[in-house]
Amino acid sequence: MLKERIARNVSPRHVALAAVFTVALAGAGSAEAQQIHTLPGSSCQASGSAQDLYYSGVSVANRGNNTRSAVCPVERHSPTDPWQLIAVFVRDRHSSQNISCVAQARDLYGVAGSGWSETQSTSGEGDQMLSFNAPGAAIPDYGPYVVVCSLPPMEEVNQPSYISSVAIVEP
Image (cartoon, rainbow, N blue to C red):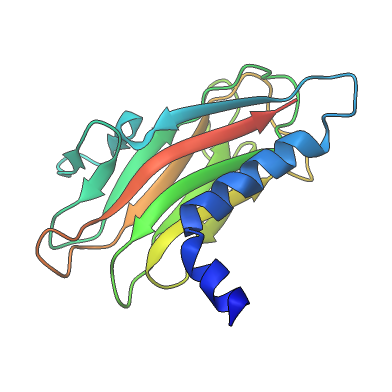
């Protein structure tokens, strides 16, 4: 009973932030300092030629009747070293469709198929963190690095799915 009460008082957002900081602090004993950089979801841009997304001060949401995509830049401060974690914080409000994000690292020229990519999706509704761990393969130095997310349509009035922020943990 006590466990249930504690679990109800801890929000998923707090758990997700704790996970990001745990990864960052896990390497704190080494000589290198850990850096965490975050960008608001509103830094993401609509993908495609005629996509409408709703931008607030910190988030980007899909208020439309169709699935829409957003491209989120990932700013690297150590572009020749592998990252430890990229985390995308989202709220999925669709009952049957998930938010799906693809993290990509391409060569300097942005050539499709170059570099690395990984896909993660939400599981059900609610606040969630999609995490992309350090790639097992070499990634191109100096990017570009992006996360592209597919946001499901809005089912209920004023209840859109959205991206709230993107964080990267680097050595």
